[in-house]
Image (cartoon, rainbow, N blue to C red):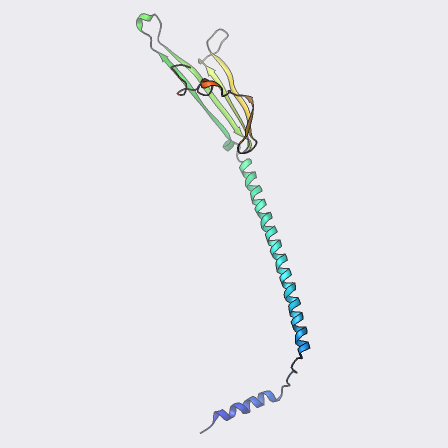
Amino acid sequence: MKRPILLIPLLAGLLTAGTTHAATPTVEELWNIIQEQQAEIEALKQQQQSTEQKAVAADEKAEAAVEAVEDTVATTGNWTDKTHIGGYGELHYNNFDSDSGKDDEIDFHRFVLFFGHEFTDRLRFNSELEFEHALTSEDGPGEVELEQAYIEYDINDQLTTRGGLFILPIGILNETHEPNTFYGVER
């Protein structure tokens, strides 16, 4: 019966026979190695902090660029998206009694066209062109008038200024002069 346990020390001796052992470093050499490693750690920490600062600055620049692009897209969109056209009209039909001597009549009392444009999020133009009684002439009842045309600017979220021709919000009739908001059958 063979004994494998005896072979292990023999093999270990053969493997280490040709090698030389390095001398154990002194305390002073170990201290120098530790100091070099500590200096390398400090340099790596400074490099990491510098890299983090550069990454934060790059993130801020990227965010500013994204905001600038979003603002540009919001303010320079298609002009049709920023232009508004609308209007309203008012038609009257008067059905007189036959004994009054008056003929029944239909009066296209007014037709108002609205044109507006949003130049930026803070600057807008609004206007209303009004046609009254469906026709105009020197001695006729109708007229064409520019009812409103003004520029509106938002100074901040709470304060807006206007300049131009607009209806002053004075009294109960100025702001409630359109059909279905005025008080009475006719304004």
